[in-house]
Length: 322
Image 1 (spheres, rainbow, N blue to C red):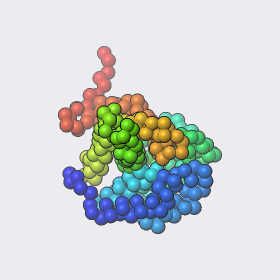
Image 2: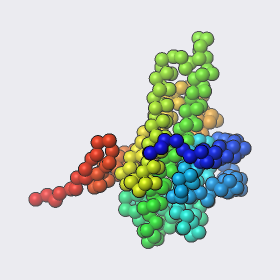
Image 3: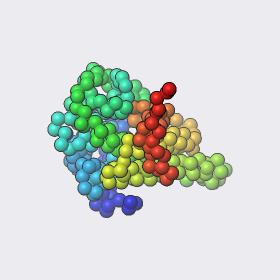
Image 4: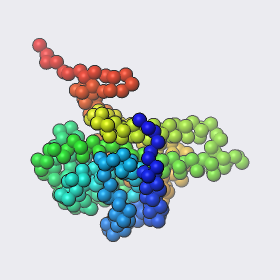
């Protein structure tokens, strides 16, 4: 695996970053909370203009890498548009399907469902596919674009495996971008905030928090990059994608907890960018399942299929009791 991203993909990510800057960065998320139509009227056309909504993450190496890095840039400012949901739909199905949600068991609420026409939901455990009907918007502080929905079995089984795998992968890049944004805020504050005449980043308490934060951010980036490569060469199984989600959840907990501590009371104010990033991360961290549920799914999948890691784990089928 080459650790360097293709030059063209990095150049495209810079273009995406410039567009996000023109929208005000995290300010776009704030505005969309107050004006839900801002997503359709302003955010979507900007992404469409640079071809972000037409990217094929299953395409050649350069386009697939561009899709991953574009999602990461979008995540850095928690841009209020479900780019992951759109790109997780295989290109051949996009004419009939506007987006993919992931669910586990019964589900009555999904984020951004009101802007995704003809969306589907895929059950992570059973790989069943449901059509999504929006009942009404249900905005909440930790679910700013939530909608009450009704799911109906659609029978579109063949779409489930590819869509759910790509969604799990791209979620990790989106969250990785958001954690990078949170880490940047904490690191800048540690450099600029002074106490007793010195930057607080020189204090031992802050240094070890920075070390934990940076390690958590980088570990998610590294595993997401490796899983992207596994998926491209056809070696990524369900356990690999669930392991990535588990790392994503653990990294998010570490980065956000330490970032809030470094910024202190300021980082808890709703007006601060860190608080906005934290709020807008919550739907992805909690749906379709949180850390404990993801661990259970991963353990079940490893028991069934094994896990090809540094120390491979063979499958352990459950034997019937005598």
